[in-house]
Amino acid sequence: MVKVGVVGLGAWGWNVARSFAELRDCELVSCCDTDPKRVANAMKTWPTVKAKADIDELLREDSVEAVVISAPAVTHYELAHKVLSADRDVFIEKPFTLNVRDAETLAEMAERKNRVLMVGHLLEYHPVVRRLKKMIQDGELGEIYYIYTQRVNLGRIRGDENALWSFAPHDISQILYMLDMQPIDVSVRGQSFIQNGIEDVVFLSLYFENRIMAHIHLSWLDPHKVRKTTIVGERKMVVFDDTEATEKLRIYNNHAEVPQIRSYGDSIQVRFGDILIPRVETTEPLKIECQHFIDCVKNRTTPLSDARDGLRVIRILEAAQCSMEQDGVPVRIQGANSDKQHSSVISDRRWHALRV
Ligand SMILES: NC(=O)c1ccc[n+]([C@@H]2O[C@H](COP(=O)([O-])OP(=O)(O)OC[C@H]3O[C@@H](n4cnc5c(N)ncnc54)[C@H](O)[C@@H]3O)[C@@H](O)[C@H]2O)c1
Image 1 (cartoon, rainbow, N blue to C red):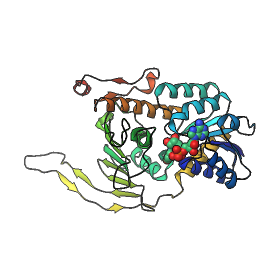
Image 2 (cartoon, protein in one colour):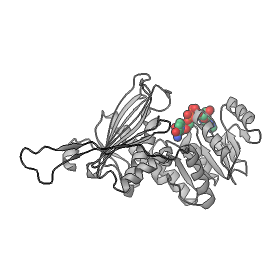
Image 3 (cartoon, rainbow, N blue to C red):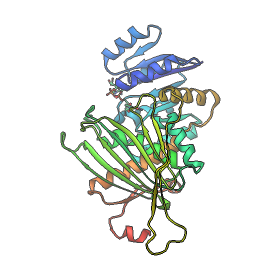
């Protein structure tokens, strides 16, 4: 039994706490929230769980072996620092931190102290995303041309972070996981309509090696609820629609066929094949994610979405924020080999010319 404490019992944190409470080889022993109403609710829901007013009280509970942080993003660094300083394993909801420096500090601390550090990149635990990764890695789609994702609805408008930091960790981590590649640069345009300086709508473009492009559309100000990923490959095209209850994945056997030897007048053929809706496991991704954290704590193994994964996403988010503040100027992403360097702005638009 791994004994877990959950910090932050808001809209999402409550789901997370419930999920850990329901796992068989885990015991939710403590939780905390700075809002006394949430603490009172927790006491009513889980009478045997010690509900506390803050993380310091929670960490004084010797029985707590691992801590899950699901408080607002702005608190992640400070709370995770406390957890690691108290020699406990930690699961941090997305976004890992709000800048590269903090992410590096936590990554280094976890490594030095031999602690498990996992970041809540939920989509890496989604059965459909895992299936898509396998299809890409097995070459079933052929060469990947481009990917686009949409995460839009008329939803909760946050006051402490913009749509980029709130939503993009999902899409970026999903794309990096599926492609197993680092982007070269990012270009972002966003606009604040409701609150000054907090972007409600964001259009983000990533450019990878092999000419692969990825485009991410994010908004909490949209008439439709869309959670969709489209991947266009040389041989097949796929659509993952996470708003569908069961038929979440569609595989289109469609492609464009260029004749090997093309003589004058030969046109490129567009082929339409069958559309396949495969059966995919329906386990809730949050359940799989929480179980993975417990397994890593028990077996002292490195999580799939570990500190390095968290760090590469924060590097892209920091570069993306930088691009957005400069009206979409492409910003180069520093690779994993230059961990100490921060993202730098390619102020010179010749970057695109230099790249090819
Ligand atoms: N993985 C996902 O799909 C997903 C979905 C939604 C939110 N999230 C993430 O989960 C986290 C929480 O989001 P939410 O929607 O529940 O937010 P929320 O605002 O609904 O709840 C946050 C809770 O944290 C409490 N809190 C604030 N500061 C605290 C502190 N220092 N110590 C203890 N408690 C504190 C607040 O009182 C509140 O109850 C965020 O990081 C968010 O990005 C993840």
